Length: 300
Image (cartoon, rainbow, N blue to C red):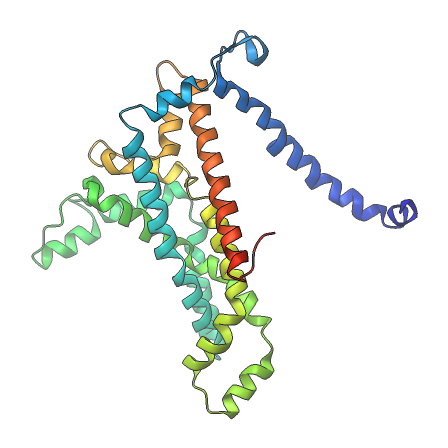
């Protein structure tokens, strides 16, 4: 064993760097989660702060905002998962059958490009396009005789604007994984199907989809494992006093009570974050076990 390590020591050195990164930025910060069970004081530090048990968890569960925030987070995440999953697959299947390289490269470039737009710029574009006075979409709707009003201020429109703008921005980049999976399918399967007179739709349904299904299931498991971890940047930028009823999610709530509040409560926000991560872990394990029981691909 020692001799094998010495013969391949360069590979172990390369492996050491990501392991150090994993320890410093993933495992070591877990120690800070103990403040969820304390009335943390920056002066006293973690070791000197008073232990209060599940006080902050109970406070969150009994808070007036709990059910509204949980519903907003879960419904937005499910909406994003259900609406966003099919489109990269459909785009990858379509591009896989395009034989004109110039057209294929153009479509790939046009669909990939929005992914590299920053979140701030993306929300800025939305604000400009949907502005009730100067927005392009508002002006076109006005010419056609429609009054769409202030879309960014309508609570019922928030989730749709968030999800579909995200699909437009990321669908091209997300389909790269499926294109890679499609390229690994044995060409002889398609040749046999063509000889048997199968149409392209039949080949997609009976060859391509089963071929990429393991990748689809793995990505679905990972996405479900991040069900409550939507991220606060885009949501926070899209929030305003008019749509706050449907736009307040766990991540923005933690950000506000933990950092922006006039009296930041680090223990309370840490408790909410720990609760969110525990639920994500439970969902990840449950969906992975369900995939194993149904004989699908799984993480372990």
